[in-house]
Length: 72
Image (cartoon, rainbow, N blue to C red; front, side, top):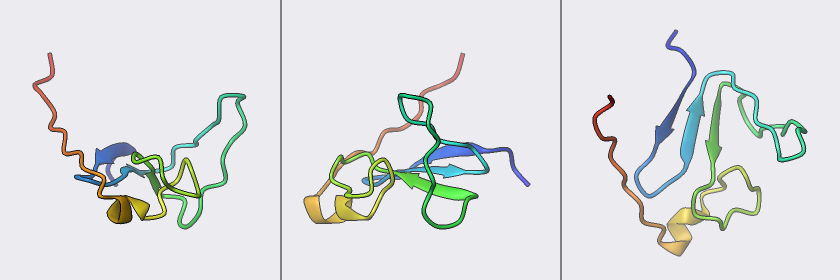
């Protein structure tokens, strides 16, 4: 099994794969919807389930396709 990691999806959410807890600014843990081993975080800001993605990025035409540079 690969280590926990975050994948940036083109024109979509940040996908966390692996068991990584998510906390708010006050230190309270979010209860993630769906399977605990894969969670999608909203990047477009339009989800009604923030910080989790609900797919609204498709409706609002969110565009973002960053590519990783070389690591030093």
